[in-house]
Image 1 (tube, rainbow, N blue to C red):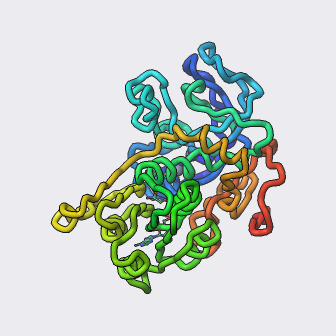
Image 2: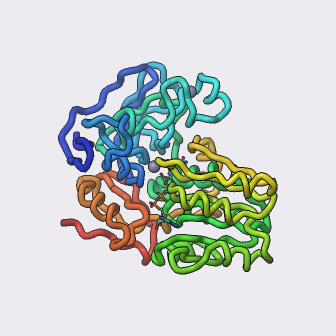
Length: 365
Ligand SMILES: NC(=O)c1ccc[n+]([C@@H]2O[C@H](COP(=O)([O-])OP(=O)(O)OC[C@H]3O[C@@H](n4cnc5c(N)ncnc54)[C@H](O)[C@@H]3O)[C@@H](O)[C@H]2O)c1
Ligand SMILES: [Zn+2]
Ligand SMILES: [Zn+2]
């Protein structure tokens, strides 16, 4: 089969590799029809994720059709169309029993395209298939559910739910990349009073308005704290999400919050950030952290099916799966290309009639 293979920092290829086979009785083999690229894949390519070894197939978000299952798989069968989550679950360990699959102790957690071969490929071996894949209802296209593999549950669980977003709240979201934008979409499920998006890139702030932000602040040219205080009678936001992953945005997210408010950190941090306890101790502030568990996939899928959550805005570009190399170039150059998420379509993708005039269909070279 063909797959996008990581060959060490800065190196990747669309290579011919051996077809995956069932190893454990709980495995399934899935034909990948629709996949996508995550900012985390770019981190791996930079060499920021040393546990991912050269030779690993990348990708942790996909939809496909089951081709074969191991003897121990009882709830999915060949022919089933399934969503594969960025987080796998053994279903048996203490954390999986609590629905905290991200912390799985039994071999699950974030493994695709990280510790085992991933989903930017024609076929994939999917461990713990009974606990880790989600059947896709007939009426939904691959693309409608694709972003449930990572960004939507991440922002919903680690942002909205950890941050206890409530009706009427002012929600300040620092970072308007795919994660911050998914934070806007899923915060709206709780009818906040106002969503304020903060980013250095005007193009991302324009996206934020399309996704439903009420106010935008370019913190490169404006004082974000002063503006949020102005909007909230000097109190600060009820909830802030950190959706970037650098020290200054964590510190900004903490500065934006009102006494009694909540800071929900979503960003992946590689460096120490300062926690200003000397300012915060007296303000009754709650700070949460988290790795996504994806326990909310079924709930969010129901919202998509009922038309109350529409992730189609994320799909800015589409490429054939065979052009994954070119898709990476487009995704990595988001400042110029405006890419949010790129849909990679295999020959048998269930594409349906999703999308609208905003979607640029990438030219096939
Ligand atoms: N906790 C989890 O489980 C989880 C899961 C997935 C992703 N993440 C993390 O979420 C973060 C966001 O992901 P993404 O895919 O949206 O990333 P992204 O890089 O596409 O977007 C980040 C955005 O932040 C903006 N930005 C950069 N520096 C800024 C600054 N100083 N002030 C304001 N804005 C700034 C950029 O312009 C960009 O729009 C990343 O750290 C990612 O690793 C966490
Ligand atoms: Zn991801
Ligand atoms: Zn487990």
